[in-house]
Image 1 (cartoon, rainbow, N blue to C red):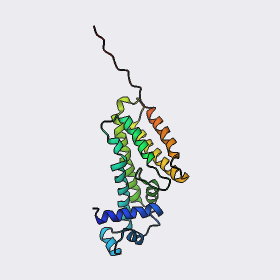
Image 2: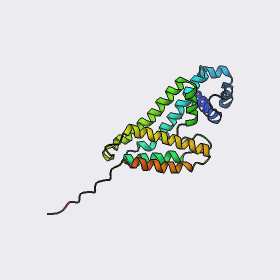
Image 3: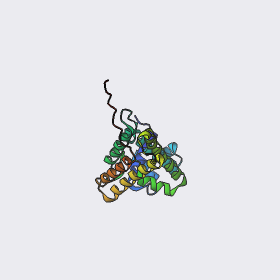
Amino acid sequence: MKDRRTQIVEAATAVMRRQGFGDTSIDEVIRESGLCGKGHFYHYFKSKEELGYAVLKLQFDDFAERGLMALREPTVEPIERLTRFIDAVISAQSPHGCTTGTPCGALATEMASQHEGFRQLVDALFQRWADQIEAVLWEARPRLSDDADTARLARFVVATLEGAWFMSRVKGDAANAAGIATELKRSVLSYAREREPAVVGTTQ
């Protein structure tokens, strides 16, 4: 059973995804979460800003737990893990708003523009996402070309996936992201060396 604080954060996330952080009031969060009143809210959060930090962290923690699962599959080769991850993120896109597939780009962007603390947190969370992708690319280093910059390539993957999500939302067409995913995977694979053919032993 979820604790009360988590229930409040999830309720606030639902409201903010619909109408944004700036247009969400504490009263709306109280109604959405079924709290008794503001006193009950302030027992868990000192301010709307403190709640905002919790909302951002929940989104990225949820993504790290489920969205990044494909990157942690030890039985799959690193490059294949990354391409599967890209497919998994794109398949989770929705033209109607945020999904569990990606951190919610629109809400995170809005909040980062309104508060320096939010901006720093969003930056750190996106960097954490990029770091996990870079770790997979580094694991694949023997198969990558010498000019592959794993840190830059990881940031490129993050930026492209967030851009694909945003375009899908604007166009109202989740299928639009499929073509972007194809080009992204092609770009990643362009850094991969061809496998050397296996050496077949000969009998004397």
